[in-house]
Amino acid sequence: MRTFGSTEDYIKHIELKLELAQEITDETDREIIEIHRNHSDQLFTGMPDTEYSTKPILAGFNVFGNLNKFGGESYTFINQTGRDFFIGTKEKKADLKWVTVKTPKGNRNLFIIEGGYAAIRAAEGRQIALVDLRRTGILERDYRSSLTRTEEGWISGVRRKENVGKLKGAKDRYGEKMKVSQDIINDSNRKLALVFITLVAS
Image: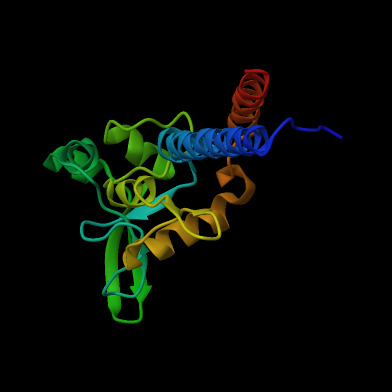
């Protein structure tokens, strides 16, 4: 057991221990913020080992992935470029395969996009190599700014009510692939281990 020559030496020893503990806490906090930033990048630029559906879908002009007033699900486009790719001219509209869908509120004419949601994204000029949760940017801005420190620790998620369902739907669809990737965790562990060794040795 270590002994001290005086009370002052013991107090200095304790103060150094407290300073070390605070530095480790500060570095850990910084790394948690970095993990959140990297995880956000993963979610909104492309999750590992994911791909967009190419299953044919029905498309309409009014809604995107929501129940419309006719009681069925149909798709429209996030920008004019995507819309014009499929229905920008009379000739393109004439070449589409149209179907009549019976809904609780009557029949609706929709057209088939053979390449599915992946084709819609490609037409809009968005990446399709990996699944990302970026569309209008509302969910992304909410999630990226959500990291908060509490008395119990750090929490992240979404604050806006309309984004809760979006995030839940993504978790239901992609599950484990939405977790922080092992590469991000390993990188963080390496950096924290190096910081700890450096601080303790100094």
